[in-house]
Amino acid sequence: VLEIMLLDNGEPSNYEEAMAGPDFDKWLEAMKSEIGSMYENEVWTLTDLPVERRAIENKWIFKKKTDVDGNVTIHEARLVAKSFSQVQGVDYDEIFSPVAMLKSVGIMLALAVFFNYEILQMDVKTSFLTKFS
Image (cartoon, rainbow, N blue to C red; front, side, top):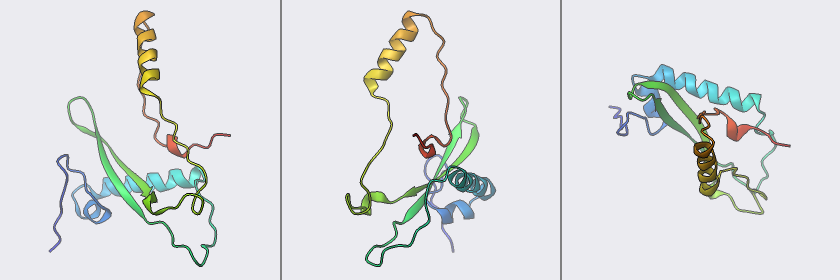
């Protein structure tokens, strides 16, 4: 008997739960989209693994995006590396995490209010996969 443990918002906690649940087709489509984005953005280079190293494991993360009324509008799947097993200087040398500082966001909002600008919000689907030169 396969038991399914869903979080409060009905999101599966792993691949098996996603494929056994009622929205399996939507989760499968979301996973295909994620893999397609990775191929399109060339996020990795296939190489031989050194003998003394192990490949880093990964995990699917599933999220439901809702509208203001709580209706599910998007099923989102992200493939993430379990990078806590990596060793700096051995597995990687640099870290990049472009995140806005809270102060910067506050300043931008204050300027928008002062000048009576309209504020728009958007979600960039694969922003973390984008290469910057």
